[in-house]
Amino acid sequence: MNRFFTIGAISAGIGVAAGAFGAHGLKEHLGTDMLAVYETGVRYQMYHAFGLIAAAWALSRWPGKSAAAAGWFFVAGTLLFSGSLYLLSMTGVRWIGAITPVGGVCFLAGWISLATAAWKGRS
Image (cartoon, rainbow, N blue to C red; front, side, top):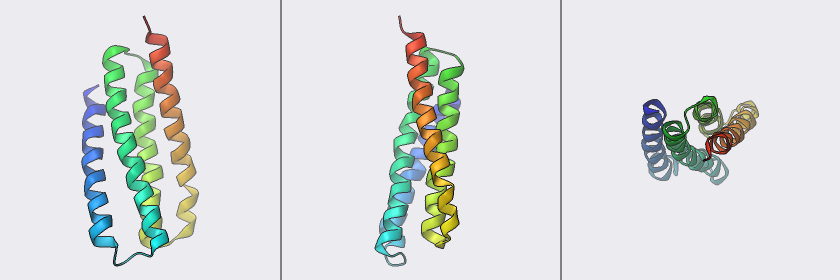
C-alpha cells in the first residue's frame, strides 16, 4: 500500500514539474502540435498519479491481487503512455508513438482492476 501511495505522490510531483517545464521551458522550442502531445502526457500522468493513490487506498481497504494489479498497471501505463509522449514530443521520432496505445491499455486495465477490487471487496 505504501509503495503505490509513495509512487503516486512522486509521480504527481513529477507531473507538476513536467507541466511547468512544458509551459515555460519547451514553449519556445516545440511547435504547437508537439507541445499539445507533451501536455497530454502530463495530463495523463497526473490523472494516474491519483489513480495510484486510489490503488493504495483500495489495497488498505480490500487487500488482494486486483488492487495490487491496478497499481502496477497504473505504473506501467504512466511509463509507457506518458513516457512515450514525452519522448515523441521532444525528439520528433514518430515510431515512439506506437508505444503510447500500450500504455493506454495499461491504464484501462488498471481502472478495470480497481473496479474489480471494489466489487470483490464490497460489504
